[in-house]
Length: 126
Image (cartoon, rainbow, N blue to C red; front, side):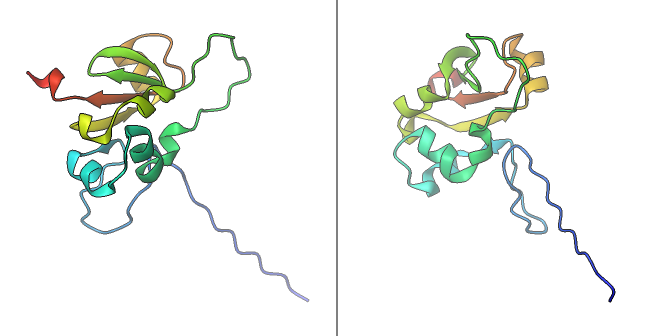
């Protein structure tokens, strides 16, 4: 008797691909129109609905007690961990952007081992 094995593989990215040819979907960005269309009350809810992988931490062999996980920046100021997103209504952001750990360390400095979610606010665009 011959056995056939079928292996299905998938890869995870910072978000999730829409898989539509010609789609302008960007896994690292949630635009204002996506935020508005999501009808979610807080920015945490928006991320959880549209890009849930942003909220997951990469596993690490060594963790320090002060490891906060994914860090949130309001414009260019560090705001705290992902719980900060629960404090912002969805109407408070122009967009949200995810930076991978390497991008975050390069842009925002050390201490961003799990990546960064940056809130672009209208206040920061003046």
